[in-house]
Image (cartoon, rainbow, N blue to C red; front, top):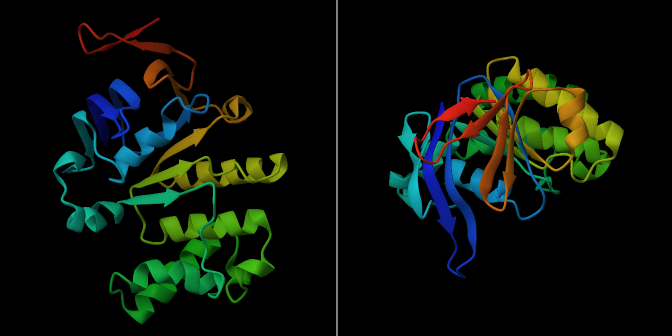
Amino acid sequence: MIRLKQVSKTYKNKVTALTDISLTIDQGEFVYLVGQSGSGKSSLMKLLYGKEYPTQGYVVVGSRVVNQIKANHLHLLRREVGIVFQEFHLLPQKTVYENVAYVLEVTGHSTASIEEKVMDALTTVGLKHKALDFPSQCSGGEQQRVAIARAIVHRPGILIADEPTGNLDPKTGYDMLKLLHKINKTGTTVIMATHDYSFVERMPSRVIELNKGKIKSDRSKNHTLLLYSMKTGDYFVV
């Protein structure tokens, strides 16, 4: 479970990215985080994996209060949270297999365990046949699938995808969306930031919309509108 309670984030340059954000995301949910550029989507996601800390309020991810995690212990949180970015961030000198395996190697997994988990992850994203290829031999869509395999290889309970389709053409982007929903059906909580509202229409799920650092609306899969009351700290149905 993920819980944010009255969270605000102001950066050192005095720019306020988030203001009084309160929300709960249950295990196994698929959530679209939408809003225009500058709405606070990336800032909110950074709070979930400890890249940033809230200025006010608290952030709970699983059993951990992110505010209280020391920098040298953040790796423990990131074993529970997989992260996919718009940029693929693959190591060009390593093969597809090696790019995915690297995550496990640095955490001390055995060779046998690494091989099993890497091939499982590559099978999930449909790239088992590309294991020995290098990133330069893969299309943009395939490289993003490698990045997703790397994010899920340690079998996290939560997958955060920050604009994962931003560098892809519409068809490839939609294929990526279907892959994220497939991963979600295994029980993984998926939070996907996007500015492309067509994805929400094609594969409906819960939608949290941000505007100027605040929650504008929170819609369930069946389009029930939930609005947050700052006075009571609760959501109510419209």
